[in-house]
Image 1 (tube, rainbow, N blue to C red):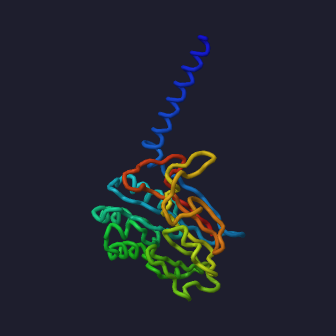
Image 2: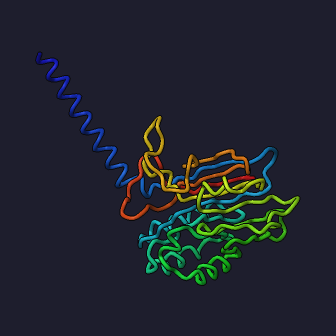
Image 3: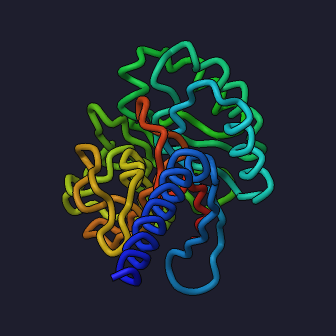
Length: 259
């Protein structure tokens, strides 16, 4: 009986320690433990290298966002793509743009739902992205000079692509905030589609996946998916939604994509 009591006591102690370690990781370590993931799209030798990040949700943590920018610069991509949600509150926009302006490669992006909810003006965002050599794409396209790349960006509230936005012979890359938007593209085809919004669920259980994701995500919660419209990559985001500064088995991510 004593052996059973000791075993039970050890089991309870181990369980409590394990639970405490998980909570510490989810609340103190993983929310800012930036990951860099490498993905290759298509066959043959890649001709372009880009960085994809999403859902900054800047709330004032300048050192963390600066580390994101520093990491992007250290990767030296041809250009960077951002798929929405710079801030949740307008008061944080100036600081966020001041830091994002330090990205040393053309930065292209689209707004997310929280960029609209916050009531921010898109004009300073447009100027910030343009100053890097990139563009803030509001249902618009941008052919990158000297390349065969054509970027298209949709706004999430009223997404619309011009009928002739895709360029024949070019590699067409679509930026959109909501992953589920890819189901509404009809017969349109893209070489690559990039989205965010899901945050990967922020908490992912082993062998199960995300516990809950926002609307307009569907089955496209995180990672690379093959869809009828082409390959879709969903970035799990840099920041967190509201006050839920928790991540488990779902680190914030900068994605390096070769295409």
